[in-house]
Amino acid sequence: GVVVIFIDEILGFLKVLRIPPLAVGIGMYLPQDVTTPVVLGAIIGYMYNRAVEKRENGEMAKRFGVLLACGFIVGESLLGILNAGLIVASDNPAPIAVPGSENFAGVAPYVGLAIFAALLFLSYAWVSRQSRQPK
Image 1 (cartoon, one colour):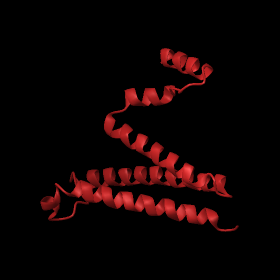
Image 2: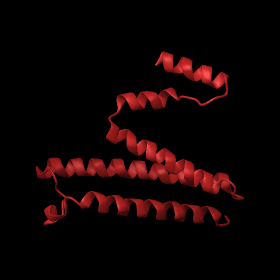
Image 3: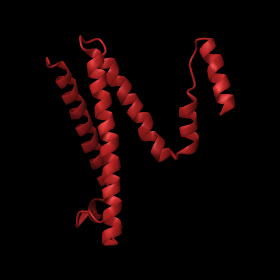
């Protein structure tokens, strides 16, 4: 960690690409299936900020985007806790599985990803519209 901080400070002094020590630590500590959504979320946030920053109320739109991202994180956490509680209460490893869904096991992750991507896009479009409305 000290070496990464040292390299980051040297790069900062030279005004070149920075290496955030926290990001390096997260990448080393957490498994890939956890860090990949973090990276994708950062990319989506960057693209959203770039899309709204030139607007008249760009700073407000950016804050709305941060609030939406926080809502996604909290919602995912709450649903994870609910799912864990259902698993313990029902002694069933998949208590909310759709009956007969075994036939769709191969395609289900892709359908879920497509639905999530569509909802994510629609949510950010809605937030962007809301930030344009006069107060």
